[in-house]
Length: 195
Image (cartoon, rainbow, N blue to C red; front, side, top):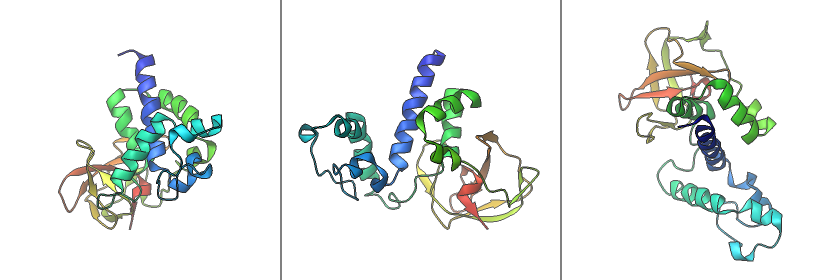
């Protein structure tokens, strides 16, 4: 697979991920009255008149909105789908793109505010190692092999000894920890946990 092809795949993955995790009321389609605050379609594609409306509600958006609405019907599906950094780590692992290549794509896909939100808190780190202890998840976390949501807010993850990051992406340390309830390993960032 060529770098150009992989980069194209990553751009669509980022765009899909960003759209899927964005609240309905932050979508351009909402601002233009095409969907309501719950993602319900108010204006069909054939009724869109301006180029701005057509750009805010493309076939890509319809696909992502349908997936988002389906996820909203499953238990826990309405909460945040996970941190960008953990998801980006999985994309990096799958595509074998370097952090610089992913940064270039990110700067094209995310706005400045979203890029700033990738800053991390480091209060429970010492020399970039995650301190031993029990932590509580603050958002859903997916199982890295299947993508299935297994970690829910308030679930516990335990760190027995100082834990080195598995990787680092956009100044975010990625840690592989064990989810106490299932015994399965999940990837987290500092934004996914609290004491």
